[in-house]
Image 1 (tube, rainbow, N blue to C red):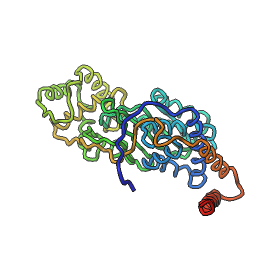
Image 2 (cartoon, helix red, strand yellow):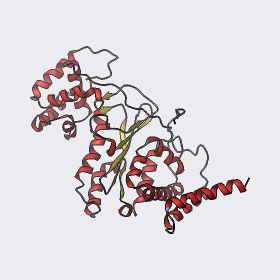
Image 3 (cartoon, rainbow, N blue to C red):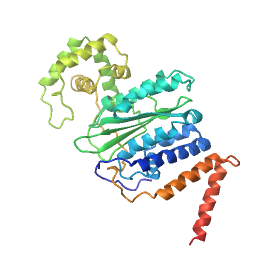
Length: 362
């Protein structure tokens, strides 16, 4: 149960090599135990849970108050599982910055090695659409810079991605779980984590359904007609409290995109969002026209509902005990390697041993 919220600043830095190498090993052993005990799908359920994810990062030894925990944990997970992915059936793609953009290629590469029994196209679509939603359909002031796509041979998937608000220096993490998602453009997230909440253009809110329908309809109109409506917006004197502005939307660029949408004629908002070139400004313009001219409700509800501590790698709350860290890796590895008794019995044995030590070392 959550009992409080930590508001902490962003610090610069990165995990030292000696720590990251241990994080990779420990992450691998923990995932192996989860998969053997509960199955691959349960790991996706856990990793997409914001509190479990944060706890996992803490167990691996990264600072409890770090936004860098997201990128470092996902990196350690990707590296740690790299050599055993085909064995356990869990694959981790993507990462930070330019690496995130290679996610479709990485999915294709896994498929080419015949590690999947089906076409990778659906995973590539899911990866791209989750990123498009959090960068375009949800405009909350956070620029995505990290995208991690995790999937199984059975076709299950999860996404962990993170954005940064350059003005405030705060991070926001987006959790997706394919099994729990019914619609890419209507309340698709399992959780969104941040310590700061404000106004956002939320085109994936349930209450934005009419605006989504109207936006898709507008994208099928003859472009000059939509531009005429856009010009009306520029003439309106919007309240200074209105969360959106048309000042940075260039009419000529908007027209180019509208020509493309007019030619493709998307049937719904999801197909509109999937069109290459349809970005935040296009969606904002269509949303404003839908709201102010056609009276379709647009949601400005910030969907963030979980908080997570964040800051940066700086050695707090205490230095990592390397000796005990290595011992944990060794114990967990032995749990997995031993095959004479079940994983459940091994963990029970470890629990009894720790209790014995606690009672006898007092």
